[in-house]
Image (cartoon, rainbow, N blue to C red; front, top):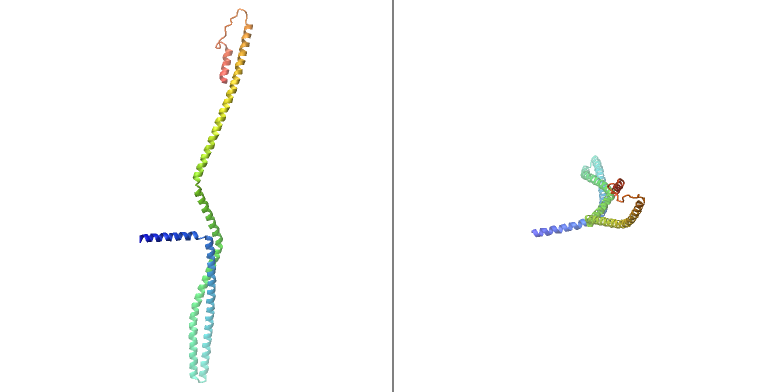
Length: 252
């Protein structure tokens, strides 16, 4: 029994799933309105038929009452003429019509109750149908919006935005790495060029310094008086040279 119960539950769950998937809100609403309209038509026909039956019963009751009055008058006439037997038959006919009228009166009360209830149901159904028609477009729009949101969420779930964002971050890091390498290479190239220019400029300075030394040596030899010593003056003893040295060190 346990296995059969589980199989039964699986079958019912599967059928319910199929039914849920097959239920389209738009189609269900349209079909509901059509069904309500058909019910309203049938109810109106039933109300019309009940009213017709009520009218017929009212006419029959009125006729029975009229006939009862008429046979009572005939009984009076027969009794006046001395026809007691005829008067008795007339009163018997009157009694039959009175009973019919009384029975019809009870039926009319029941029919009036039924017709009143049917009319109330018809008014309620008309109001409900009007309300459904008014809300139909709104609910259809909400159903479509819900379907679109569901599809979008499914797409986002399948796309796995977390992994996509991680891939984007990896590419961002890659770009930053490439930029850093490019800057390093540019800096190395710049340093190499500046070094080469510095070497060239250094050669010019050395040549210019040699020329200045030669000029200075020649000038010093020429301007020295006879008998003067040619011993060079120490840098520590010359204040101007010490000042120049300090300026160069500060510039470096």
